[in-house]
Length: 100
Image (cartoon, rainbow, N blue to C red):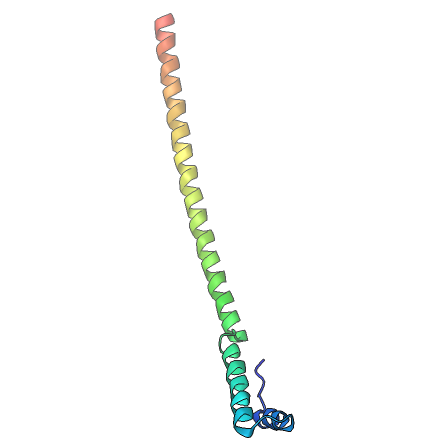
């Protein structure tokens, strides 16, 4: 949350402690600039909501891609399994032919 720095109040307080007006005003401005700079890099609620939405969309896309990849791998495994069954059947048939 951004707060306004009362440079006049800071200047007056410093002057009451014996600081010269010019130095007190400069010090108050330094404090104000520092405070403003510290808030410039903070994310707003809108920034956070936007980032959340972007991340949710990316997660959705990754899940979709992952499901597609898993489906493709399952198909490859099933094809390899069927080929293995056919090959084993052919081997069994050849063995039976030579044994009998």
